[in-house]
Image 1: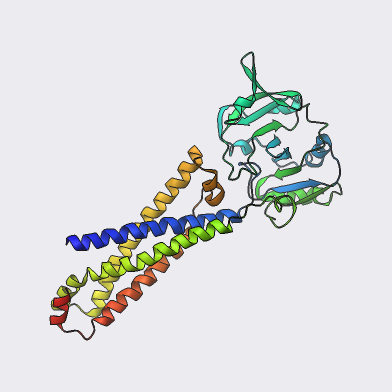
Image 2: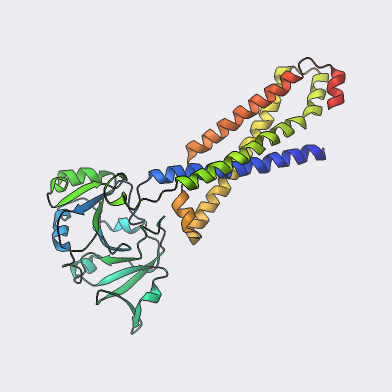
Length: 353
């Protein structure tokens, strides 16, 4: 009994490890298919606007202000800075505010020099009369809120978010690229308002990683995926041995069931049910542990590498393939055991059991 429990415990541990590795690989593949986010509160449908000549922010704003649907509009400044206007205030929900507030309609209407900073940027701000200010090209911007930086990559991570309507920015012409988002209807809005045909800017979907802004900034994770895949393969080899040992530990019970009249088909179904029950339990535990890892990294921002590789979402398709793959392995190994015992006498089986 102790030997059987030992073999079962080994099978559980190895299957949980395989489940975690496969879940992470599936999450990584799924995460890399999503567009890179210039802000954490952007949808997957947002578009980029690339200027063809020197264009100030005020001119850029006129292109999109005619859109009637609620949207979020912004530009990239000096790599890690963003300037943003949100016509729909609900689009700030994806930004994890730690303190203070986001921009209001008053900030946009009065062109206030206001800014949101990510946690960790406060040391770069100057405190005057109890209020923090961030200096951007000689202009002081009042810090009105601090948010948690949850972007999946340092390359696209916004360190500060300025009021796009700030008076200190209106003559700015050296912005890198613009972005526009109103959810699933983003591209249709761009086309219906004639923005897609504007000669002064080039508009394209953020999902297009082969060209445009993201082409030169994309992070290659193929090597990391290869390493995780190799690790999963090594653990997989151990899982085959563990499954075989587990079935060996059931031989004594197989003999007893044969002696009391159980058919080979009944024994096969019983073994398969036992195996699938253990498999589903390990998949459930492995999936739970993987999700806990991703959530903890998201909430406490433990590692940029984990965020960049795996994101926060699991791939249910990879979990399904994981279950299907191991069920096939179980069926093959159980069939081999049943076939090897087909011509054995009860005396031989009792001796083995």
